[in-house]
Structure formats: structure tokens, C-alpha cells
View 1: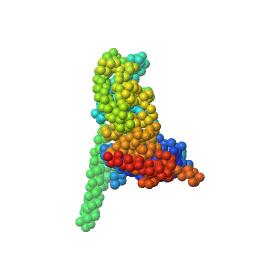
View 2 (view 1 turned 180 degrees about the horizontal axis):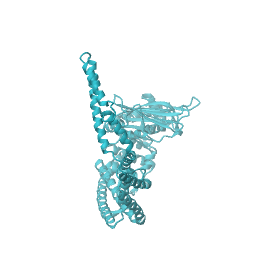
View 3 (view 1 turned 120 degrees about the vertical axis):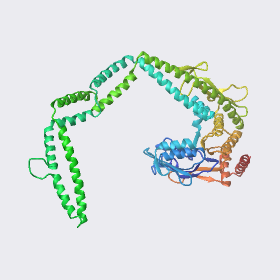
Amino acid sequence: MLEELRITGLGVIEDTTLPLTRGMNVITGETGAGKTMVVTGLGLLFGGRADAGRVRAEPGRATVEGRLRLAGNAASAVAARVAEAGAEGDDDGTLLMSRTVTVEGRSKAHVGGRTVPVSLLSDVGEQVVAVHGQSDQLRLLRPSEQRGALDRFAGPEHEKLLVEFKELFGRWRGVADDLADRRANMRTRAQEADLLRLGLDEITRVDPQAGEDEELRAEAQRLEHAEGLRTAAHIAHQAIAGGGETDSEDATSLVGTARRTLESQSTVDAKLGEYAARLEEAASLLGDVSVELSTYLASLDADPARLQQIYERRAALRSLTRKYADDVDGVIAWADNARSRLAALDTSDELLEELEREMTRLAGEVAELAAKLRAARLEAAGRFADKVTVELAGLAMPHARISVLVVPRPAGDISLVVDGVESGVTPDGADDIELRLLAHPGAPALPLQKGASGGELSRVMLAIEVVFAGVGGPPTLVFDEVDSGVGGRAAVEIGRRLARLARNHQVLVVTHLPQVAAFADRHLVVAKDTGGAITTSGVRVVEETERARELARMLAGLPDSDLGIAHAEELLAVAARERAA
């Protein structure tokens, strides 16, 4: 749940803190006081689009900070995502989040005191909060939103089936697109394939080996300087092991003499014995070098024929590197890529027939899975309609009924026969979903966009949310004036339903209706201060007498009227009895 929300520099709000509680929190206030800025702040905190136009010129940035207490099913998912970003919550089980937006439009996000991408706020928001406003009612009129609502209600097994279908649909369309492209571009593909084969033939004839150009360069350098190398190795060998024409002692003999001399005095000073041991190691090393120099001299040979072969081989490799890559390894990589590309360019009858068979097989599996999706939606549609209808009865629409139509989508460019009916297929299946409202007996069942008034649509939206709450969903629900166009008994029923939601969820409601506000566990009022040069707004918690005055203002615009306050106190008493029941 969201324990606290602090907003600074956003719209008319200069600096205010909203202490929130479990259960139902309502936010009220005069029109233009800044209630919408609270919802805007929530949107920013949970990764919404930053609008620099709402940032106050002074201090030039808007900041929204929130303290989340993680619990329930969402806690582990949020904790894992936060840890993945390198942040962490506090020891008391809360998570601090903040979002800052400047007048220039720059945005920064922090979680647990660590700078994070704004996308992390969005990820957290998806797990912990759902915001419903008047725009959400309009979204509910879209067929895609209605299909999404039914799919969410159908449950996790249905959602797994939908994920499987989307993956299978993607494979099917991938094969179909590949086959269509090969058929449509046969000539172009054949021309490209011919060029690739010419290059591959040339490379295959030369048969370059990885690292070969460097090895040949080093070998050529040795052969070109064979005489100088032989002279250097011979002189070094004589200096180490002797055998030259001069009578001078070799290095091995000199080191041996030094070692023996030091050993003769090692009994007097052990330090000399240590030096003698080190000279013995040097003598052993000199012996090894002497042997290796002998081997080197024996292998060193000026071979003009071999040198000519190397020149010719390097010329052939340079011919390849001029055409295909910067070095031999690059030429080899080009050849590997060319072979892969040739397979992709294949337009042989055999391959086209194979792709045709694969496309047909996948199409059959897609149609079969689409039929399972349709059956699952039909089953869920009945349950969904019944539950929403029950809720509507409790929202002062006792004769209204909701029906959910699941019908085959009209055939289009991508169609399959699903359950014996040719249907258009998309990654979401082969069905069109439509919510219909029968407002009263004898009336036709009409699509929501035609059959529901603004007040009815608000109640349908709330009824759907109550139904969703019974199958899980985010722990915090925000309703921004979803009671627009509603009054009287229906307003009381909306308050009662929101209070019922608040038994298992934290509910935040922005409302103009006193009948709804009366059901709150905590009542916050947004009030304007016009005493200074600039209008600002703040939020305060109201209780008891002050709360009754606020409800009286909402009822009749007369916060100081004794009759209005008496009416408000009666409304609070009724709401308290309803909540207790």
C-alpha cells in the first residue's frame, strides 16, 4: 500500500503531504483546488509521462515522493525488480520512490535512494497500483479493451493459453512471410546468390586458414634475413659454449669458475654459498640456451623456393583481402556469412515445398489453439456477465443486465477456419468481444457506447473493477471522479461498493459526491490559498466536526449551515452503519 505521498511544485500545489491509510481514502475540494494534481502526481511517481507545463516556475521543478509498504503477492515481484536495478527497500519493509521533473522537461527517478530509469517506476506501478479515471471509461468502449478485460477475468490459465497462442501465431506468420518473400523476389534473390557463389568459389580455391597471413609474414621475414640470423645465433652460441677460433673462455666456463671459487669460501660465509647456488642455476640456464641455439642453427636454412611459395601465397591472400575483408580472418567470416545468406536466398522448389508444408502445419495448430481460446472466452463471458450484472443491481441499476458477446472476427487478409467458421486472426486470437448493456426489461441490448449514459458507464466501470478485485489485481486502486454524472441513491451505492473494495485493497477516490466521501476511512481535503500573490493549494486531513462541515459544503455549498451539517452528520452515521454491516 501507499503510506505517504508528498508533492512539491506541481500545478497549484506548492508543497503538501498526503498521509494515506489502509482502506478507503477520499480526496475532496472545490473545483480548481488541485485534486487532479494529486492523481497527476501519482501518475508521475509510477512512471507516467512528464508534462513540463505543469511544473511551477518557482522553484522550477516538481517532485513527487512516495513511501510504499510492500506486502502480499506483489511484494516479491517488486522486490526482485528493484533488486535487479541495484536498489533496495528500507529495513522496515517500505520502499521510497521519487520522481523529479524540471521546467525544461528533464526527468529523474530514484528508488531506495538510488538513481534508476523511469521504466523501473512503471514496472513497480504495474504491480502495485491501478488508476481509473474518466478517460478509462472511454477506453472501456474500445473493443480491444473489452477483450483485454475478459481475458484478465478468465484467469491465469487462460492468460498462459493466450501467451502460447501469440508465440505460435508469430511463428506461423514468420514462415508465411518468408515463403511469400522468396516467391515474390525470386529473380533478385537469384542474382544475389550468383554473386555470393562467385565469391565463395574464389575463397574456396585459395582456402585461407585463420591467422595464416601473420604466420606467412613471419616466415618470410626469417627466410629473407636467414644469413644475418645464422651469424647472430652462431656468435652467441660460441660465446656461451666455446668452440670458436679464439682462446678466450666461454660464458659457461667463466660462470663455472666463479661458482667454484665462491663455494670454496662458503664455509666461512654462508652468503657466498647462496651466490654460488644462484650461479649454478645460471649455468644450467646457459646450457639450455646453448642447446636451443644449436637446434635453431640446424633448422635455419635459406630456401629460395620456399620463399617464392610464400610470396605467391601471400599475393593470393592479398587478392582476397582487397575484395572481401581487411584480413584473412575477416575473409573467412565473410565466407561463413555468405553460406548462411545463400541458405536464406534459396528459392528451390524443394525448399518452397518444405516451407509450404510447415506453414500449413502451423496454420492448423493456430486454428486449433484459436478454437480453445474461443471456448475459454465463451465460458468466461457468461461468468463475467453474471458477476457484473449482480454488481450493477447493487449500484441502483436493478433491472440492468450486462452481456458479453464472443463472435468470430470477420475474415480479412489473415484468416483461418476456426471451429468451422472462417475468421480473421490476429495475435489476440480469432474473436471480437463486445460488452452490451440491457438498461431495463424490454430494451434492446446495445453496445456500451450506444446503450450507456455517462452515469451508467461510471457504474459499469466500477462494477467491473469490483469483479476484478475478486480475482486479484494491484493492491492499490485509484478512482478519479469515476462517479461523474451520478447522484442520489446511485451515489450511495457507489460509496458502498468502494468501501467494499477497500476491505481487501487500498482505495483512493477523488470525488465531488458527499455520499461517496461519507464512506471513507480517511478524508483529505484539497484547499486553495489565495491570500498571496500566487494561488497555492494544500491538503489536510479532516475529522469529526471539520469533516461534517466539508460534507455540508459538498451537499449544499454551505459549510456553516446548521441544517447542512446535520444532514452531513446523518450521512456519516448511515455510512458508518453500512460499513459496519
